[in-house]
Amino acid sequence: MSRPVPVPTELSEPFWDAARRGDLVVPYCPSCDLRFFVPEPACPGCMAPGWHYAPSAGRGTVYSVTVVHRAPGPGFDTPFALAVIDLDGGGTLLSHVDAGVPEAVEIGMRVRVDFRLLTDEITLPCFVPER
Image (cartoon, rainbow, N blue to C red; front, side):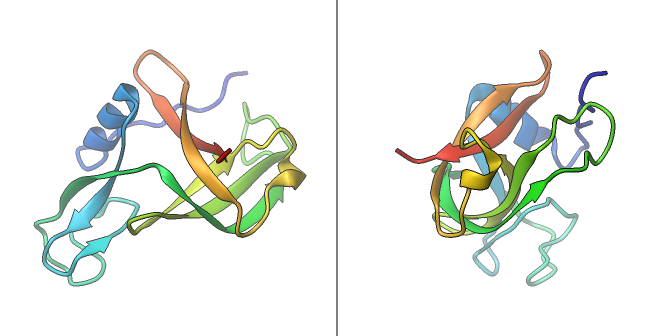
């Protein structure tokens, strides 16, 4: 069975379009200077509706990590490392980190984005150790 494929929404379509091009973008609110994820109708910091996507360098630091041994659903290969990544420039993402073996991923580890083709339409931003 294949892995579930994300279904872009009106709010997330620009994120998936950028990922397909090999670019990482995150929602940015110019009213309060907050970068956040996941995209919401209004900024979670100040409730302003006028946020937009801003480029990210695609580098960051593992803030928290867990090794998932029980698949969250059909199509997921386990074990895998799931981490909260503090992005350089602001914002956080929850993402897979591929360091060869999941147990090698550690809090404080520097990582960079690595795009993985899932389908012709969906490219997943994952992270790998920055070398």
